[in-house]
Length: 275
Image (cartoon, rainbow, N blue to C red; front, side, top):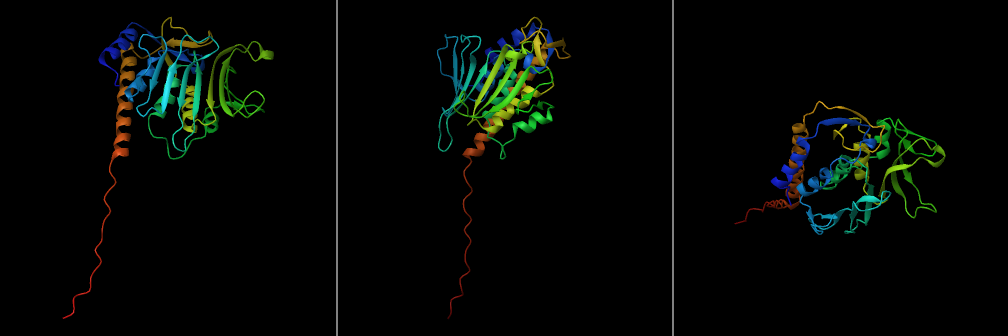
């Protein structure tokens, strides 16, 4: 289901009247426009399989293996985004759950990585965190420079039946309680490392995200400055990304459906007939 001209026009109309502000760090930038996720999935051929009049949205991949649920009526502390994979062959079930205030651009990094073939070698999210300068404490938890965002790989315990990646942004003024939670994300143990790494890479990127004037951020400590980008440049970047997704997905499908070359039959030399 490609993104229609009407849908692109509505995206452009919204952003045409918003003065963009560069907003950082990313874990405090706020949710932004959810269409960074949904338009990206549509560009990859996913379709909406839920009631079009419901505030809930379910999008399903062409092969029906993956689905993304968006449930904005969930409670403040609940996850709004749910990405799941059904068992397929040797690949097990997995899920990822992401909270309301996670930047849509960070979630989109995960879905962009999902719709194309995985890399030959799986990356290590810890190396990405180390390269980004996120320090790890004695318990193995990586923390952002402001201490408000933490990333950890939780082992099995009384509170957790299976290992999982847990990312959380929280207040820092109630140290004894860990601070009020602002948003959270969970990645089940079976989630491929390259998808977790896509989330971590996008989250720790120091490049600012664009938010419109008066658009809510996740926290008052987010830093905002007038962006050098114009509203049209923000729209053009979105459109170019969708075109790139469609091109990559189509190229991957062509490679998968390309017939294998016919085997080359070599003729064995026959001895000359004797007279």
